[in-house]
Image (cartoon, rainbow, N blue to C red; front, side):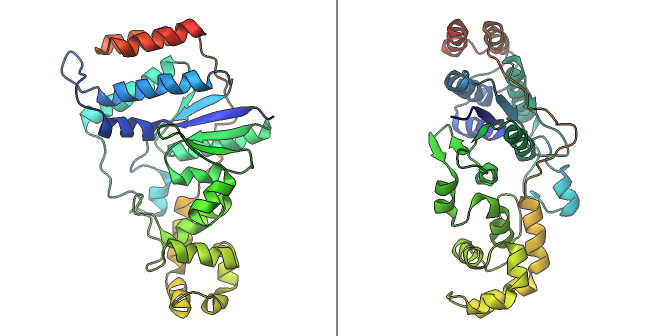
Length: 299
């Protein structure tokens, strides 16, 4: 059995905690800590389940508005607003406690967390490692390259492999960027092709292949057994540059400059104690700190 690398999409679980946890934990000067509490609780459970592997890394989204994708398309994620100081404080605190735990973590102004995870997954393949990406984000299904790779939402304990991902979306992971090129993504403000929905996009790709194949055989679209096939062909031709741009926005960058080695992770009693002390310094004590201390005692 292949060894496995665990790649954590940290930001998505921080925001999950931010929106779902009650606002009942605060610093001495009144800053909210609900996201920190929820993320620290999640991280403790996650590390406990995966600590036997020497391969674990995390990535954080820190590029809203400054990502290279905004140079390609200024409207990319334009509907999102930058975190206010209260949320920015908690985002920084969550990255700090991840670092204190000893988990190699990545983030920056030019590349998104997905790109760091894609680069780490590529490096894992050079070591013949299977990849589990821990996320709730469908875009990271693109990392399912080998049959042993997994997409795992820790919160719901739902796991997808390549076959299950294709069953859900109608296209294999390696064609998911092409799929998003057609349907777009309102969450990320990726336009896609107007009037082309999920079922139509999956059917066209299943019949003709990715966007490059569709472009070479565009007249064949009108002959597909789809309702309004001729209109679909016309829409594709009219909005083809937009489809190609949307695919480029959706495609993950797997060669971030300077990220050339897959880091190792080893949980220690010292690192769990650092996390416990940091939480206590913020004003979070009680059961959560004791859980981190108990985790350290198991190492």
